[in-house]
Image (cartoon, rainbow, N blue to C red; front, side, top):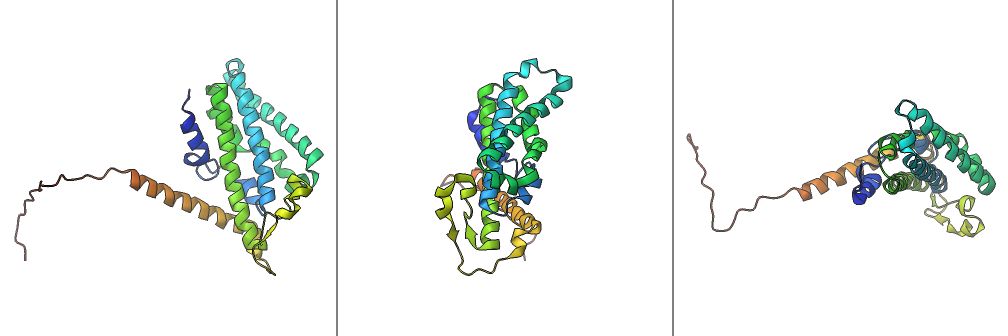
Length: 236
């Protein structure tokens, strides 16, 4: 049982990020991150399902038989995905059609099933909600960064079509990074997503190594003391 909220937060956002470290949920991540609005739409949907499923499973964890826990997890996750699907059809229908099959496929997202089985079934409600929220925010952040990279390189814009998610007030949010840009098709296609994802993982690993090196204590020799070194053999 875990009650260290700081560790739960850092695990979700960085140390155990579902996209950069666990490498879970990569199929929708690579498929729909052609623009920021697509990435944000899928990220928000996944985060809401994560929070709802973690909350429900944690509440009823003492009543869930061990032998049938996985089918119960699937039913709970599928219920929340159905709710999200209906809400998107009602309020963001055009974005729902763009994301297509990847909204129903949230049911099979290994990141959500993994948190249910590894955390929510073993921990109290408060910690489980925080775990779901932080894992969702960490996953959404990676989606948006990758979507931003691909949109800038592929289309020369940023935050295009945000009105699909936030309504007419967001039509002016579009930023044209490069005027009269002809586009870079490779960045929009799945191979561009693989390259972008690889760059993000490499950057995280470099940062982690620098943090580890900075945290390693350095042996300081007090002033006035000298080390005696024994040398054997001939020195030419």
